[in-house]
Amino acid sequence: GWLSALIREMEKPENFIEALPPPAVPRQPFPGIPEPILPQVLHMSPTEFINIKRMDYAAGLLLETGLEVIEICQECGIHNLSYFYRIFRKQYGCSPKEFIRLNQEGRQ
Image (cartoon, rainbow, N blue to C red; front, side):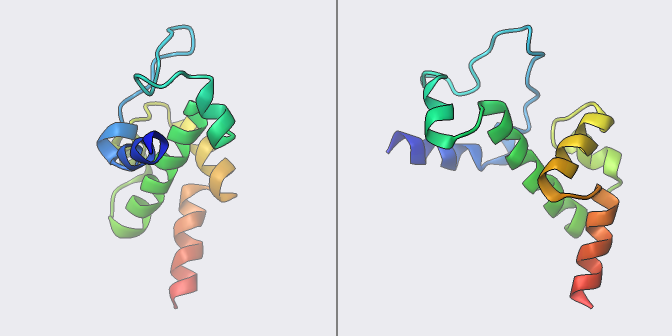
């Protein structure tokens, strides 16, 4: 029950857009949930989970809006463009601009 509720909450953009502090600053991303439990249940770190949600959101914005990549990067709560590109490529296997092109070709 708690895991389903947690995942539903993390689907909301306002909950995954909030910037995470640098790794040197300890912070529990999911208050009330012992942090070691999440990797065991989700098979990924809390940061990886949040980044997947952010990149899903970014992909939707890329396809549905005319926003520039830098604007989408900031909209997703990421303030380092090269980091955004790195995690986007990790998830989708291409850059944001390639992602748009590939999806536009697929619709034609």
